[in-house]
Length: 273
Image (cartoon, rainbow, N blue to C red):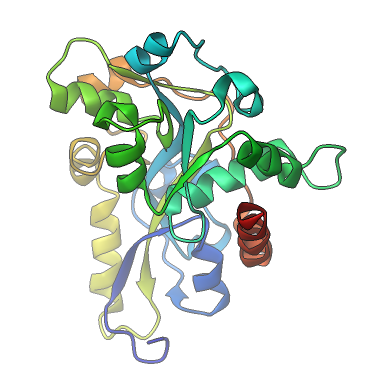
């Protein structure tokens, strides 16, 4: 909306499900950040129009006691979530209103691709037939629906970093929740210099600062996601209690941009029955 007269100099927080929209609309100036070589190539964008600052893996989380109390086995892959055994036990976020909800939709599209005998539309049709609950955002899903908060669903779309955060704030020695490693979408957040800024040099220096080791090592305990600078040292609680997915899902940002709106519309149609 402010493309030709931006109200800021730097944008931060736009993720890989929306970054192509900013690039295609010429909102961003190319900037090769200091320390960019510390960032894994899979997180970077062609042309360095945006700098990866944080990442988090959106995964299915489970309440260990909640699952045990129901006498239900903890699922190990997202295929199982349509089984009658898990009827009514999962809450997801609406991808039209929630970033992790959109990330999980992307994970299902990658896992059950279009053009196959059983694609993501079939999967979601089966999930809804299995009484999946839908929350408007992550806070509602985690702090209302999730059994850890007194809700009815012991399975929730959250982050691989949620178990260490539970340990951190619950001051416990073991994590009360766990994270599935299958069907995890890697959400990357970027910072970039806005085209039209009166201070391009200073804006670039701010982006450089966000990627500096000093800031990157502060990210986990303040934002509860992970630093992209590979030289940053993680807090011990994140080292001990994070289980990383072996094959996190990444979809090319331009592919997402071309299909995002239609995917959300189709999902909404399935949700409405």
